[in-house]
Image 1 (tube, rainbow, N blue to C red):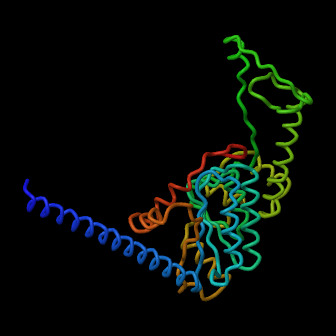
Image 2: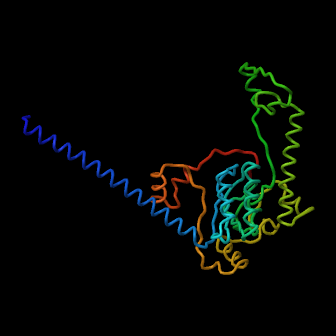
Image 3: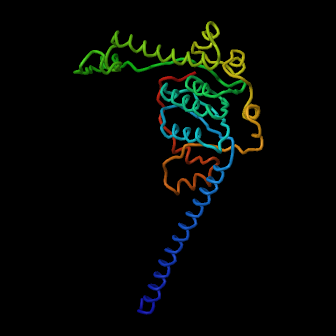
Length: 304
């Protein structure tokens, strides 16, 4: 290659590098404009009066971001009513308690209605009790009013493998229960009392919120699961239906809601700006954000 050809190809490389820089710069500017437009449109929507929709899906756990969002919802002047959609088998008793209390704080100033999906059991049903009106499908699975604690017992496996666990602890109740030791009778009694105390809280909540007592409460607070139709007959829910029936009930409580838009309130995931843009643009309802919110299940109060 002679000097003229070398200069020619070198000049082409320089031009390609310059054009690549400007292409990247333009893409970055376009993405920034898209993010700004999406954010501005969301801010504009948030400032208008609307019916808020909040969804509870999957296992319920203690979630500070969820609690903060619901606190914002409680204090929002533009959210004039709330629909809580529930599709959950339950979760931790702490998570269900926090969720119930958050919904009751919202209900102090605006009507709240729960719409049950395929399942609203255990902690999922406890969350529904935070609403002023509960709507469920005829075949929704409702109830599982109870508390459970489970842990494995590996002592037989350890014996077969010749494994022993040496432990130094301050008392026989420290770090109980353990899958590596036989059940301590005193620790088992304390665990039983703890489950019973949590169950009494749950049972009392059902009695208070659903106006049940005596034999009627005994019949539904036994850990069993009911279809929506049976749940309605036993006063665990108020109506068979879905979101249209929920909106009709809200309208009966506060006129002028029929022309308002329904806006989803959801916990924002911590993810890069590009991920947020792609989640909002390429997926219905921001599916990338939903995937990034996944947490492992914690089983303590769960059903059916």
